[in-house]
Image 1 (cartoon, rainbow, N blue to C red):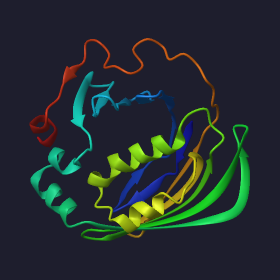
Image 2 (cartoon, rainbow, N blue to C red; image 1 turned 90 degrees about the horizontal axis):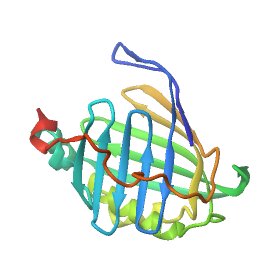
Image 3 (tube, rainbow, N blue to C red; image 1 turned 30 degrees about the vertical axis):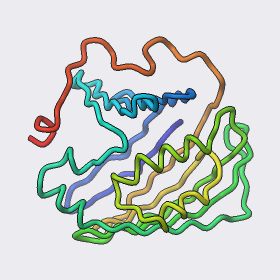
Image 4 (cartoon, rainbow, N blue to C red; image 1 turned 30 degrees about the horizontal axis):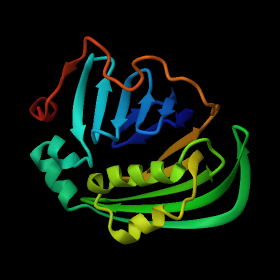
Length: 215
């Protein structure tokens, strides 16, 4: 899939526009998200996530469900504990074909309150016309997200309204008065044999630990 993020200026600093291509592999028990800079490999049998940094030739092993506060400096972890998240999802009747799949549009609004309030609005096009168990995939993703953000049952139920795999999205996040815009779209979906090593940490990678990340 391709992801484009517009340039944004915040607190006097300008972040340039970015374009990223992600190769996502999904099997019955494992999943891998691979970009030029980093990869995330999820092993559902071991309940582990491997976060691989290609530039630093390093990786971290994270237990699922992920509690992100364990991997942050103390002050940032305290901010996470005080964070609250609300989610609203509205199904629409709009449809669109993305990568040959008929998709239905859902409108999502997420409000994140910490030291400041961030609001994220998304248009998501999802399809159930896919060659794998999207419900199992969705359940696992929500299981991973719940400890990362304090999602109550109401927020989880809102996410579950989105039926199918996300094929395309348009997101606008307002943070500190600036709008960050991201566009995401699947450009190819096919059944293929994953290359050797897709679901494992490449050789020659050193393991990072929580103390190293926090420093």
